[in-house]
Length: 369
Image 1 (cartoon, rainbow, N blue to C red):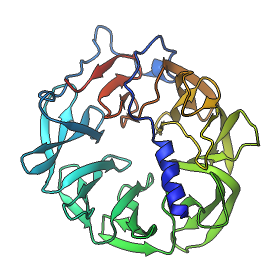
Image 2 (tube, rainbow, N blue to C red):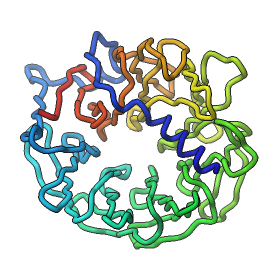
Image 3 (cartoon, rainbow, N blue to C red):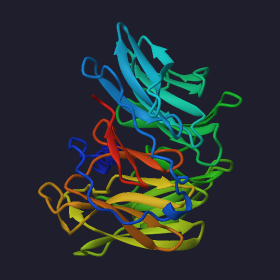
Image 4 (cartoon, helix red, strand yellow):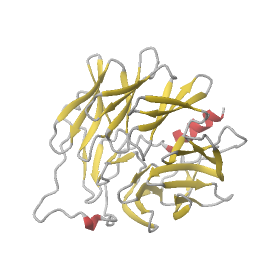
């Protein structure tokens, strides 16, 4: 039953995807913005909406590169993934399947993509392709569903969690360069990469209760397990040895402390007002990380409150983990999903990631007509 608790925690982490993006008001200067000015006289390139979307349903799935996105649509009996250039409006088919495509996840360099599908029989195979659409591997007959965790250190390695009946799961270390699949002796459903050979996880299968659990490291070569923190709510690995750990707050606390670490060295702390769920699940805002500028992006509630009744608005911030400085980019009434582009200049926002914003200028455009 601990697996159910983890699923519910993840749902709370990624909830609130049903709200439209608020209008963007005045914004502070983004850290590093002064380093990337446009040449004199050069206008900001315009964004071209995806044509024909009033007649067909699409899901914007992932960034392909800094100027192009991937979107999913159905055509006849096939489910397709298209590359769409935001500046030219050109599209190109990358992947096609008789099964329904439900999710696309890029590796750290956006050179490979894990494409998750669902068959009519209810199976959930995963096709791993390169940036040209060539099939590298196919994962099937492992379980009823998968979670994919690409390594931020090696572009051809990932952890795949295969979900089995009765709330069980198997973990596999996969190397797409030599098509090697290794089953790990670990019974966990949510892992993060700590470094090239180590992953971390919260041990919900132990004696933990509620929204926190002990945090352990797992060595992929030796399978050695080491206790890292006694009580943590969540941990996130971003690459370049930058890790976020959210520890359990004191009883009655008004804020949660987010700790950013580089190995054993703490880089910075960021305080976030608590939105209480009055349950065993803990609310964590939508987030992303720009590894190039080492900026953590997230929605920050403007005050503490009840998650289900909260109407106090959010600040969309960029937090510099090396200097501990927070920059507010805009204010929003809603808390919606977003995803940074590979260079960190743009971000997709919205329930279907249907709005693209230039984070340097604040200009936003809808991709769906």
